[in-house]
Amino acid sequence: MYVNWPQKVLDKYEKWQNKNTVNLSKKEKNIVVSLDGSGDFTSIQEAINNTKAFPYEEITIFIKNGKYNEKINIHQWNSNLSLVGENREKTIISFDDYFDKMKKGRNSTFYTYTLQIQGDDVKIKNLTIENTSGEVGQAVALSVTSNRVIIANCTILGNQDTLYASGTGKQFYTNCYIEGTTDFIFGSATAVFDSCRIHSKKNSYITAASTPEKAQYGFVFKDCNLTSNQNITKVYLGRPWRIYAKTVFINCKLGNHILPEGWHNWSKPEAEKTSFYAEYNNNGVEANEKSRVKWSHQLSKKQSKKYTLKNILYDDSTNPFWYEKI
Image (cartoon, rainbow, N blue to C red; front, top):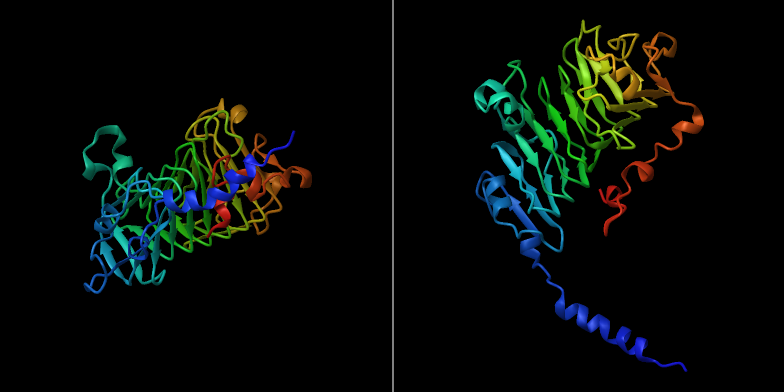
């Protein structure tokens, strides 16, 4: 016997949904920050602090041109939030904390950030984020420890430990400029760097991954351009902060500052067996696979095909293709 009860439920669903869904007003969803007082707030952190916690809809904070001398935290409850600058070169978030200044013991590095992202489903676009403390040791410009985070068309400036890309979540960096000295991209996240310029300011190491043992991917660089200051000739692609580090460079242009051996074991012989450092189809003077350390890998064409955005960044959630929503 067939009945039409399910259809009656479906017919009423749209009305029920409209009645029970919390909708943010246009003003609540679009906030303006401006130093000259023409916006809703003059401080980025103040704007963030006045947004709804765990909003159902995306909240966009539009930041007008200016240099914002602030230490900013996008808290765990500030999910579904976008910070959008008016102009990448002219909208600047700047601070100058560093390891010795924090006086937090051996973990002081993690307190030095200029901008920290702890909320899921966050987007950062068209901004310059800088730590201006100089060459004084560890000093983070951008710290990202959450899941489904997009950093698009941004400039990230610093020296040692510029970008902390960590946590067990997934992150997507596209069309960004990232500069630094020692280990200036470090952490445990699964992160794709797509069409980015990675600039070394000193002879040192670019990456220091701490990938969890069971993670399928770590740091993946695709179609990136690796450049350096003048007279820089001894830069490693990476070294393992933790022994299960995973870092891969695919279709990247490597400058002559990259050392022929490519990778360093950080005086951890065991990491030569447990880490995974690999390359595919890189070009440039120092993309010579024959000179690489024997414990690194050259991917086959078939192996390289698994490094798609979908395979790496797809998230089994209500927002599975989050990385496409730039």
